[in-house]
Image (cartoon, rainbow, N blue to C red; front, side, top):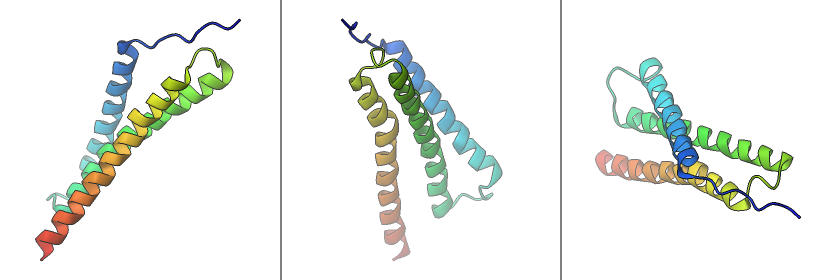
Length: 114
């Protein structure tokens, strides 16, 4: 008889958000202080947003891979809902935000170019 999976409390999820946010801000700051031009224009503004969200996505994928590896070793410890939650919240949604911001940026670029 297997034991039911343990519920994840709010603190570990909050720590995941914080770690993803820290990596996202670090990625954006690294871009800003290394390769960003002195004057931020239309294209470089999108690049800054891209690097910020890319850091969050990379951190989210790292958490998801951690959960998948842990589930492979101890299936009873990680419920399927946690895997789905981890992937959707920490990887898919930031990517969707990146696509949405990219479309808005493209629309603004096209309107401003006319």
